[in-house]
Image 1 (tube, rainbow, N blue to C red):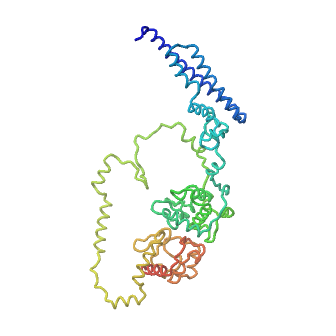
Image 2 (image 1 turned 90 degrees about the vertical axis):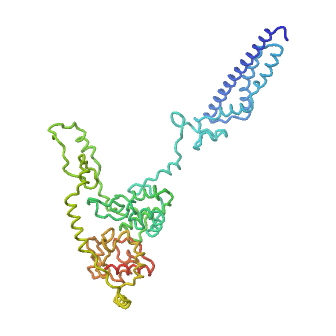
Length: 482
């Protein structure tokens, strides 16, 4: 055991302090070296001068010199003797020369900086290659101006005068195929709408009705709106996947479905303004800010108010009129007199119209006689019922049938063209009927094969049945509904 424990302890404490001081000075010197190198690099980037390899080596030597000098100074000031001196020397050896990892970090810190981000949208990804030379953008040096190609990807606006239209073209029949593949699942084969999905065709002359049908043909004032919307947002779930030619073709088909163009029409940048939208003049400038805002923003009267508030009218479409407390329960418990009378009349009508016992089945000979008299073949009628599914979107047949987009087809075989009750026919249909045209089997076959060609200008947007057996079947089905 040493005879001088206190002296040894003192030497140990002094040695540890010297090591700590040396490490602290070394880190501080290294930090200052990094700052100096960073400032030099920024100056070089601003003046667009690339540093030569020799200058980089010289800068690296200058950066490490302060570290070595600081280390030597610390050792000289604290120079202990004996074992402590050896321990101190061993601790100081790594500090005299920066480790490779530390040098790499210092170099990266000198080069990488957000204020000189390259215009590649990837931050400082390429900074280490010496390409990080773009000027800072904005107050905080964040972000960058959008590139021309990025702006072009979003700049899809089409103005009513055709400004912004792309090159390309599309005809009606190509549009029918594109529409069937991409849009019919929601909007129907003939743009008539499926379930609650929007109708794109029809609704002409309904804007002044209580419940107008607003479609591309009846309501939209500008064709550019239709083109822009289809190009930007359709098809649903796959927006902007259509080519410009397909968009032109699809819009041409929508126009055709609204009887705004003929079946040989080709929509393009050159023919775009040839189309007149029926409701182009149906909109006015919204001047409510000038004409009404002052009225409704003035101080309320608050004089001569009624003592009580009474319901004088009820909502016609939505059940939103508030009821008095307990009125609903009372109404449910006791049916209205009118309802009771209706129930009695309905029961009486049911009794009067009860079906009589079924007659005896007809013999095979009688069935043959009926068929020979002109009744349609039952098998052909059954086949026609399946074909008629293509027509159900616009037409109804049978008991309770109503006019829809197209007229009721009950009794159409043998009827004069354009004379269905309660339906507004096109001018060409009415003129054809006045000229003596009658819907017989031959006329229906020819018409349903190509409606637009048979009577130019009629409202039928159906492309036509291509198979002869389908034509015969659907005519037989219509004959079965006199």
